[in-house]
Length: 111
Image (tube, rainbow, N blue to C red; front, side, top):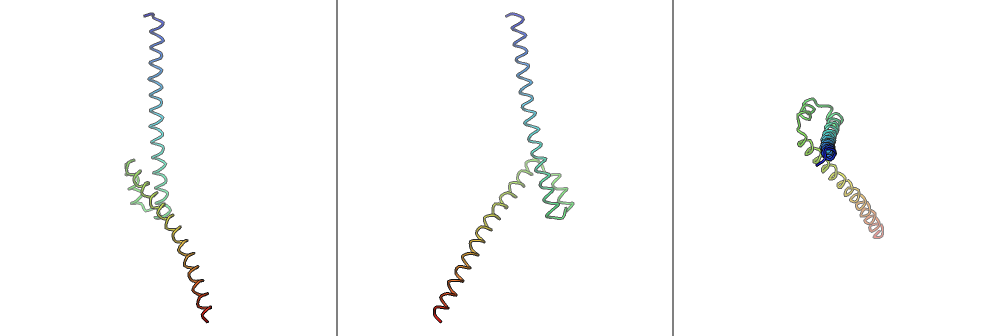
């Protein structure tokens, strides 16, 4: 094998190793950024809704990234449930008003 071929092969392998390392580091940094963003959101929730309770803030700081993922998933499910309940509540309110109107019309027709 010629020396120039060996050099080209070595440079290519080194480039591939550097590129894969860069890709892995970007992925790792992205995951860390996402978890830092979630942690900030949870702290904001504690600050806004729970008057910045220091004990809960300390707990948020001690949560692992996996635990933080679980907390945000639960919060998302609660929010979705709340949205569904509000939709059902509005429909119930409208149906109650319709029933009331029909009952009033029925009673007026009887009189």
